[in-house]
Image (tube, rainbow, N blue to C red; front, side, top):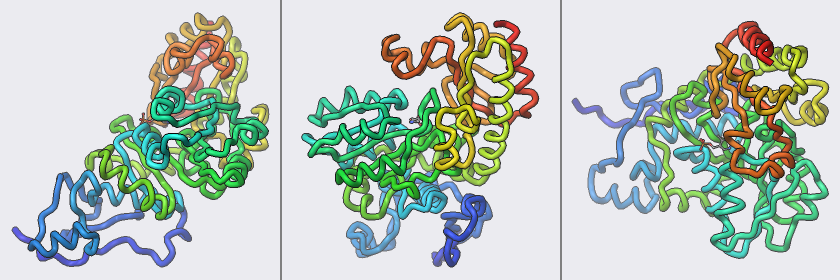
Length: 406
Ligand SMILES: *Cc1c(COP(=O)(O)O)cnc(C)c1O
């Protein structure tokens, strides 16, 4: 059966950014095929065919905006990118196969030998590997500092500093970095600020409003939120895409599978509901943990006893979906606690519908020396809990049961 090609009805509100995020998450970026499907179509195709050689030539010259090859762009992927851009209020978005592909591309696409990157020390393990081990192999200098110390950002600037890089809240100690203040220092130094916004989610923190130039996500986390696919996204100005990102992605190929982009697109529809519920439960869980015997410390940006509670109020809409806490008896206590949980599962992942607990010292941060871990505030009794969609009371009962094992 053939379908006469016609312009496809798109979601083009008068001013999409006047719509609430929840609405953008449901409709943003939707492009319908001539069938007029309700749910976004999944275009599993590598390439595209052309009516004649002339239109193929025009497509390649960029005179006709259609698709060429799914390593460059794909209709399903483009819907996901547009929805993310609308959500974030960014001019442009490009999706990648994983969060690490997004971080790597966001940095490499703009760096050359002789450049310098200044970054906060508390980073996701693989991001830290890129900065400490990988970039220096290609003549890029990197400096890691205490991201909470604004004087250290200022002091770390060199004449060749091109990028500032940070994540906030940090993994796993949930320290905050004052993004607006760091952006100001970066811009005064003529550098760009790249923010990894995974822990805060696009709903709870808006790095562009705080001055970031590029924002990256692992959409593996809250955006999918149901443990299925890896994915990533880079958000920036159109100029940044044209000048740096577009060619890098086309030629090096860290493209997301259209199938995974479709999963992410559908994940976005429920993102606001899920993050709201997870955050509400995280607040209750944090308070309950603080009252449990054997729990020595609770770190949650939404609690008044968080050392940066005031910054959290200024910079985030709530405390987030992760809670970190320290139990007594170090590693032995942490293992006893984790092993005694019945509902909450042991996993290094986060942002999932299922609540997941991690012991960073023996997993995500085990490659660091005990001294480095101590410097990062990661003690042997520290556990990171990603709060899921279960009823908060059931999670609290599970944690209380585990505390008895202490
Ligand atoms: C998970 C994560 C990444 C990497 O994402 P992948 O999708 O696993 O490649 C990067 N940064 C942060 C903060 C993360 O939590």
